[in-house]
Image 1: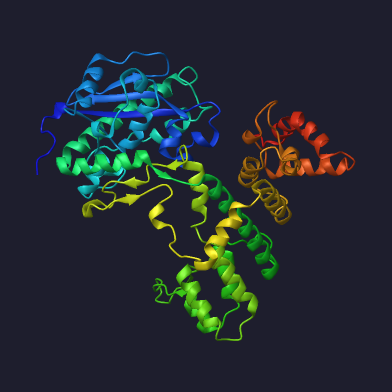
Image 2: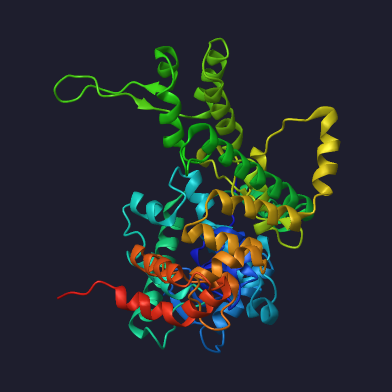
Length: 487
């Protein structure tokens, strides 16, 4: 089958580096928001490109800039279907172009103007990331400090060229090398045919159109799931007598169950190990996957086992499912009521099959509640989500009165300005004046927390707000004073 073109000058190799917009919050986190939503809350800060075998050029987009004439001319050819832009995971770079000043000045980058070097590499049985695809072909891979530099300049409150001029130059070098490596991998892999690229363009049109979702239902369904997990965790702690145990603490649950089984039950959970250096059999590993739990439950229901063990297994089996979490991912990643960019062309490599990312809608459960399904949907749609969220957070705080930093930050995001969470947040909060609640920073070293507890015990008549006002100004100094120093 014919390929698009055997002239290297008909291909422009392109790569964007981006930075989250100020105030973007979770939408400025690519892993959380997904490509299409992130692209609306980020801006390009570097653009590297190379036409054919020409040199890789780096456009610094931090300050006002003008695009080169050769790139404008190439874009015009690409609009006519005579030349093509090539990137790695091209959907990202196309989304960045289409949500930036480039699209306003020169027009949108349509799927038919682009090719994806990642898809071509996968068909050649290479890894799906540029680093390992390059090294598999004997290339240099990506610049080793690239991840560090992205973490430095890409966040909304990251470094600037003025604050880190030397590292900014390193960041430019990283972007240039990425484009050089991209071009090399593309040239060293088997070209896809025009027919195959036509299928790719169709799949990208589907990705751009997206799948319509019911956002309100997804929010309510996810709240139902989170509430059920909190209740399951409370019940697990009641059954086991172990504070902190939860449906997600797999090793802790597995040990508790294993210790209460007869030898037949233990054998279901155990995986035999190889011999050690002295020829003795190593202790078996305890496995607690869903398949083993199902087998164990079937066996235990024929025995006189303590009912608490069966209930613990059932709570883990249903509470540990990852499928309900997809409701939250749908809410986080939808763009205008549609989830986009869900399918990966040739993601399964040599088979040519599609794979998926993001919500992975193809993996949603297909089970039906039969006659109860409509009733369940109606009940979820009638849920007062604000009241349900407050009740669930109250239950969670009773279950875990001293949440970790990560848990507390998640609760801040969920509760917004609800005073319930503010009671705990404010007593730990050392944020600067007027810092939004979602940007709280905590000093959670044991020494600092003990200093807080001691102070609070010495002032039993102080309200939470008084304590918060005090720590607002004093806690940074307390933390600084408690830092270990070299003598």
